[in-house]
Image (cartoon, rainbow, N blue to C red; front, side):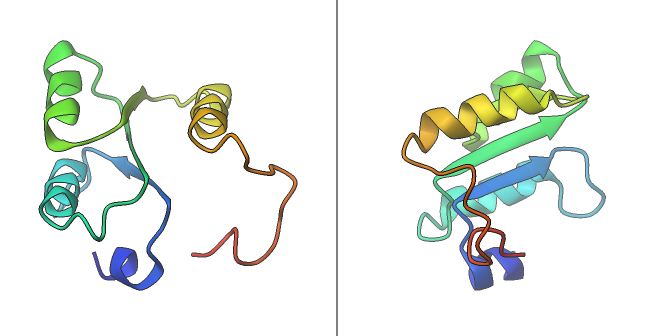
Length: 97
């Protein structure tokens, strides 16, 4: 969470099955701290059953994408949520880490 607090990303992609603090834990913490929540929270996971999708909805994810990730799916989501975004913008500010 320190990086989220420091950088305040607009989009956050989280793997659900990470060691330690998993994607569900992070989403719940963001839900409890709305000032930190990015505009778009996306689960990237190998978990594709209905229970996992239901859980991602419940903890506050906006989208549930299954691995292997299809780049077109991600780009479509980004274009929908950020319709005025410029995909050619490669300024340093756009690609903060």
